[in-house]
Length: 171
Image 1 (cartoon, helix red, strand yellow):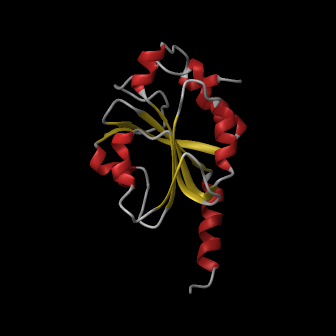
Image 2 (tube, one colour):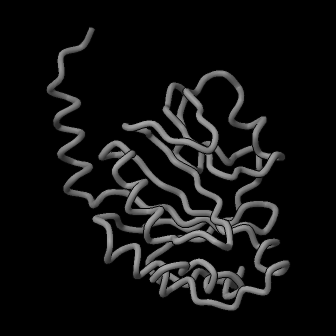
């Protein structure tokens, strides 16, 4: 499945998500952080983020990294590039999030048109689900035609993390 992403772009429809269980919502830039699950104090990583979105994340209330990731991240946003191996990326990013963290894979629609991609996102999504212990549960459409799919740990792992956090002594 090497370079799976090179065959992904171009098969997106804004009228309905391709994943029947996903919820598709167009998100205005001002509400983006909330809808992505980004909260004050979170450790957030942005990979290949478009410049127009950086001010939303540079407000000073996050521990923010750009184009590299720290372990135990709360939210990772990865704007896919046409040469990326989406399976390899997701396997590596899965190890870097907290059990209740999330990874957003975002496909820039503009890139699809510029590079002539004609592949199938459903095949890539299935590959990610088979290669990782993540589930996809939400789809959003950003205001500039980008489509994001959220991947999170399975519910049992998130519940276990919540119980561990509740058992830890407070400072």
